[in-house]
Each structure stands twice: as structure tokens, then as C-alpha cells.
Length: 200
Image (cartoon, rainbow, N blue to C red; front, side, top):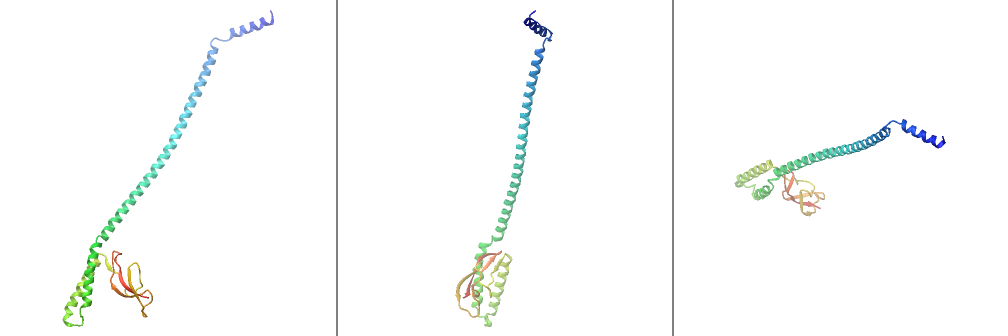
């Protein structure tokens, strides 16, 4: 028997001793490994997608929370603005009416100044005018109308209007010498400045 024949004989024995279906088992194992790795890659992809969605959900929750806080703050601001507007409307609803009353007060004061207070015949008239003026001023004060102070005060451009400036040795520069027309405020807001004469 030659060497070549011996080798062929051994190979045929190996083939004959190899159990049937061994190749099939190897192929099935390989298929299972492929399927396993395929499923693992699908699961990994799903896990990554779930993680990404969870992150998006957290961001959405945070944004929603911030939006709610902003909305609440905006509602509070609107409510406060409305309350302030209503309060201002209540406070200054009388502004136009008040402006119409000021000339009446001025006329009563002028009438008092023009009346001869020394004359006994005018005593009743003077007292009547004084009481009417006092009553009038007390009534308007209840509604927030007050006289702007000018007596021996310094010129305040916010509430005084200087008509003229004069030399006055008895007054310092910028001090009010005389009041030409009284000024008035309504609930702290100027409705008419006081017209004054100021020392140079």
C-alpha cells in the first residue's frame, strides 16, 4: 500500500467515523450566535432610545415647570397692575371735578379779602364767608384735596410755580415772598401748582 493510498484510507475512515449531522450542529450553533448578537444589538438600540426619551422627558418636565412658574408670575403681575389701576382710578376719579371746584374756592377767598373786615356792618358777611370757606375746604379735604404749603418756605419746582423774582432783604434767595394763587394736590398728586413770588 502506497503512502497516498494510506492517507486516502485514513480520510475515508475519519469521514465514516464522524457522526451524521455534525456539520448541521455546527451551522445551527453559528446561526444561534448570529441571532443572539442580532437581538443584543436590537436591545442595545432600544435601551439607547429609551435613555434618550427619558432625557427628553426630563427636559420637557423642567421646561413645563419653568413655564408654569413664569405663567404664575405673569398672572400675579397682571393682577397687581389691575389692582393699582383700580386704586388709581378710585383715587383720581375726582381730579376733573376737583379742578372745577378750585375757582370756587379762589372766589370765596377773594371775596373775603375784598370785604372790609373793620366795618361792623360787614361783620355777618365776613363770618358767613369764613364759615363757608372753612366748610368747603374741610369737605374737599375728606376727598383728598389739600392746599400746597407756601408760608416761609423754599421754592419747590415740583409744587410751586415762580411768577416773578424780587429783591427782598427779609428773605433768603429762593425763598417764597408771597403767594399769588394757592396750589392744590389730590391724594398727593399735584392738580394745580401754587403761583408764588420768590426772593432773588
